[in-house]
Structures are given as structure tokens and as C-alpha cells.
Length: 205
Image (cartoon, rainbow, N blue to C red; front, top):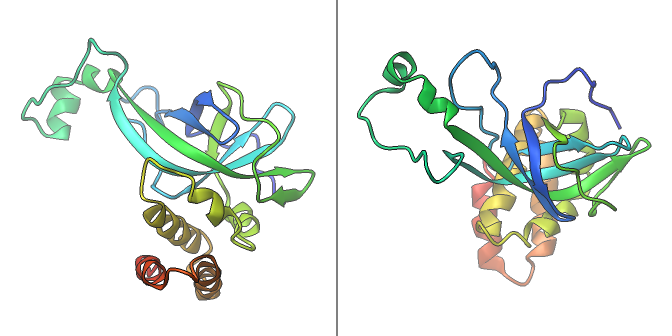
């Protein structure tokens, strides 16, 4: 399993975790520029590196932006984003972007396993984008798709389709991957043909 360099820049920091997933606050790319932190894409693959050098892999299923507290609530100002940067740059520092992710696997000693890790990530662990090599290993047999069906906050069919699209893009638009994903979905949803067709339509690039 290719291992991400420790010099890689984290995109978020874990603020709450459980054995099934975590919430992380996104980190601004540049601290000296007042703007919102970049948002992970719906269905994208994330990685947390733990203290014992285990890699925990997750799929982003929700991304939300709001105030840090209940006092500094945003209000409509009728300005463009450029105008806000010039006239009210402090506004962006009052907001935070959080990503909610479900754990779908973990890596240890050059192996990736498609099941829940033995321990959750720790609060303040950093979150990174998974590499294309890690995504290829993680999506090898599509068992991770079954874990996505347990997400209740968003429609699981939308999440599965988005995750397959994200993996397809990360793997260089490999059509063989899409064919394999379609076969895996056919097996999972063989008792619900209409649902299968709906998901298959959504995974088209």
C-alpha cells in the first residue's frame, strides 16, 4: 500500500470521532488569506493517519459551513464574495467548514482492509485526501459500498453513486472500474431492479 508522505498538507482536523466515522473541521489553505476553507467533495475518499501509523479511510457524506458559535450568526449583506474580501474580510474567520465522514477501511503494514478499524481516530488527528493508489486498493472488490448503506443523513444511493464517480475520476477515468462497479451493484441490489437502474444512471461520468 503506498504511504502518503508525512510532508503532505492536511485538509482538516478531527474534532469528534467514533468507531464508524468522524467529524473534522476543514483547514484554510493559507492562514494569511481570509477566506473559507476548501470543501471536500461529496463522496470523496479521505484518510486519517493515527498515532500508531495506521491509515483510516473514510468517505465524505456531508459538508457544512456555519458559524463557530450561536452568537456570531451570518446575515445577508448583498455583497459579492470579492466585495466581502475587500470590505469585510473578518467575516470569513467567523465561519467554519466541517466534513462528516464514514469509515470504510483501514491500512496497516502494507495491507488495506475493507472493514471498520479496531480503533477510531483521535481528536486532533489530521485528515488528508486519499491517494489514487490507496483508492485503487480500497475499491478493489467494492465491499466498502455495503458500509455506505448505513449512512442515514443522506440518501445512500446518492452517496454510493457519488463515491463511485469520485473513485472513477481519481483512477484516471478507468472504464474497467465502472464496469466492475456496475457488476458489484448488480449483486448487491439483485432484489431491487428499479433501485439498481437508478444508481447505475447516477454513476455515469
